[in-house]
Image (tube, rainbow, N blue to C red; front, side, top):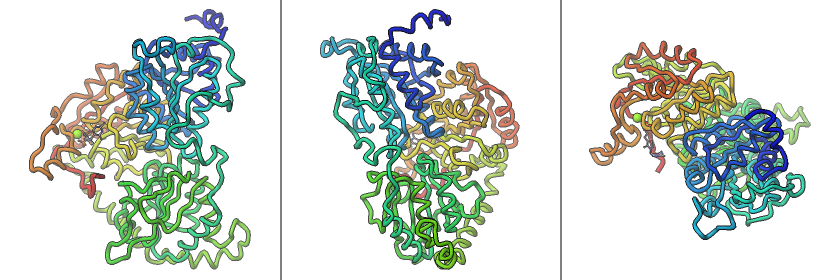
Length: 588
Ligand SMILES: Cc1ncc(C[n+]2csc(CCOP(=O)(O)OP(=O)(O)O)c2C)c(N)n1
Ligand SMILES: [Mg+2]
């Protein structure tokens, strides 16, 4: 379509144009989608917007939503996915659920069969909000063109309000195709239809939501003053809430040993003297106080049960979240705080130093020194445990075994990663190794699927990462099983000229299922994949490039070629299927 046609077609504005304008005001820059007639006006609105909104069309709706989710998690601006009615929306469900578990601000706009025929069985007629309500902050339908702009604005407002999360809005065919003026300006209008569903529409009151109670912070500071073996856990919401600098400053001021989780990784860069993630078992097992900030007390954190190892008593647990609804209710908390996480960390550093808000520097030195008794023995003990773990790893990170030990891949990769690299993991055991051995230098440099543990995030996350960080290395680590869920979207990387480096840890099995089934039953079934399958040739066939690696010494040169290729490139590393990741829990 030429510029003239676009310009002449500008008026009158239809619902799609109103939606795109509102989405842009809400912070969306890219529309991730897969075509369907029910949503054509949204495309028309994007194409004719001034400037046009970028459309990235993918090969499976889950990829569209995963890409929107990763956009939100990397840029901390809301992501937008547009899904066509019926199967388009239902194909997005696992990815929307992932966004729900990760607290990712994502708006999903669905097409919807026309109201005038509702009930008579038109194509893909399906009442989506009923299905979406439990996994979104709100899911509802807009039935009028004039309401589309306000409804989309409301969706963005809700998605980005603490505690963040996905919001779903479908728009009936006549509302989307119809023309007319939007009601009001489209900003902060009442959305009109439908009751609030899901999880209580930003109870904390949105961006301006307040700081945690001073008394709660003071209580936590008092616990810290008595602690001998404290640990601070930093989770994804510390990053999503923009509190990474305050968190780092507080940890450094108080000299707290830190364990990083999810997107909290990188807040203290790899090698930081307070980062004791590699001594996790000793730290969480022997702590007397664990402060967990910005992540649920779920299976990844032993459900909030810490201490008790080496004859130590159970640890006191403090939970800190960005919104009250996120605080754990399944375990006993010594204290808790909810609200703006920057305010929490700043307040904690001040309170623990005895300044009560930044004044009284004279008091600071004495009280702070007393409160840091752990720097004499506890911190050094954990630092030594980290150093010992690193020494213990070095043999496997440089293993010359054939078939290749998966850790060797990470030994090679670590040496090639820039400090601003984005590393994405989609897989089982292969990615568990990465979680342990790839330590980001910056927050926002690591993406795993989060606690929902959904395979298939890979290509969607990689597409988004390439767009969000145009000049950074983007590395996607794929199990060979995981690759099957989204590898077709290497086509999207090719069509949209988005070069990323994919490394497939190809052990020919669903490793994270085969080994546990063997352990439980003494045999396994439904756990085999094709040995040495040429996933690299799949990417080549789709217009990218790749190669097969079977010898450890060939990994580094292949990775160098991949980084230099300038096209989507899959390094297919055949690894030893006998190696099982040494895990202490399967999470159930
Ligand atoms: C959508 C989805 N289906 C199934 C699972 C269960 N699951 C978890 S890990 C795993 C095996 C992954 O295999 P692969 O990607 O090859 O990695 P490996 O463990 O072999 O390194 C499976 C099937 C899941 N987490 N998500
Ligand atoms: Mg595998």
